[in-house]
Image (cartoon, rainbow, N blue to C red; front, side, top):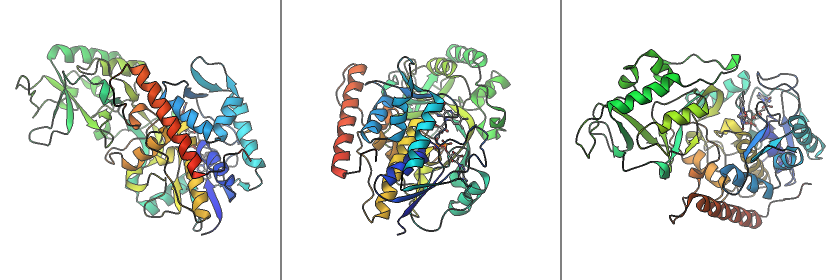
Length: 440
Ligand SMILES: Cc1cc2nc3c(=O)[nH]c(=O)nc-3n(C[C@H](O)[C@H](O)[C@H](O)COP(=O)(O)OP(=O)(O)OC[C@H]3O[C@@H](n4cnc5c(N)ncnc54)[C@H](O)[C@@H]3O)c2cc1C
């Protein structure tokens, strides 16, 4: 195996991957096309530029992002070190000074003696050695074409048309029931609605506000993938012939067909996360929450991923990747960041860290690894490998990714314990794996 690790893309994932690998003592060539060629969202030539908000998520011991932040601090992540140094006050969130944050990361990467930063666009996947693909949601067109040729274009998505995902434990199963349409297997959770409930839902749907996309993000939708708000705009009856249609579904308690039904489909193997079928949406998050919570049985639903409709390039991870972030068919290739099917700055950096460590291991003839199941990073990469490949959508850190707490205790306390469990498992794992965890 060629001992040079190639990292393609110097964003959040690629910068983290390059340093994670170099700190293990391997040579790294990091290829970044900016500033020579820009993406539609980036403005500078700096590495790890934040393209939109400056927040790396909620902090604290009841926050899923907080657990991932804590794990990444343990792993000596460059993104977390820069975030902590460039932090600005932002209530309960980890927010940073945009310029200082990416300057610090650029400096750390460029000054590392084992990293060579090459400012060029990569148009073909390097044929030798371990390669980490981390070109993000705005991967350039020639490389996108190369990925299509290599893996088949049906394994690559070009936009998110995602529906909200809720935690199973927050669904009121006294009001909902498991069933399939007609005689299909009872794989769906059904939320039945009376006419009065539907009218209220429709009223909220039609007054809800849409998120305004950037000009270059505006999408033409296929008929099979129309946002729920657009169906609402077409008329009172339209959703009843679409995702809310009740045909073939009978409420086992009343033995009757409800006026309307919202169905939820399992997102993960363990059934901890469920997405609302046909509810892809570009509604503002506050309005989305009100809409979801107007559905009987979802009044207290905890949304772990909001629906989005925007331009995004990502792989169908469960079809292509292992939890080590290697491609199943070509294990010298790794994916990280949004391209690998995660969402968010922090999640991108964390998967970059793991891909970098594993690529270095491969270069050194060592074993590739997966973090423990109870840790947020372990949960995230397992999700990528094991999620339902039909309608796969990128995922962010959330409590549905790790095993539920076994006892019924108040939510805050449960989260605190899940946080402590995850962090201690991750720490122990780092220790036994013996990674180089200095900033050298
Ligand atoms: C418009 C937009 C807004 C977003 N807002 C947020 C937000 O507010 N909060 C949040 O948490 N997440 C947000 N995200 C999602 C995601 O977290 C970020 O996009 C994040 O930067 C992803 O990290 P990444 O490393 O996967 O990709 P990036 O950070 O985009 O890095 C990819 C890098 O690869 C380079 N590149 C692309 N193609 C090539 C090529 N062929 N050769 C060489 N280099 C190449 C790019 O120039 C870029 O530097 C947003 C995404 C988009 C598109």
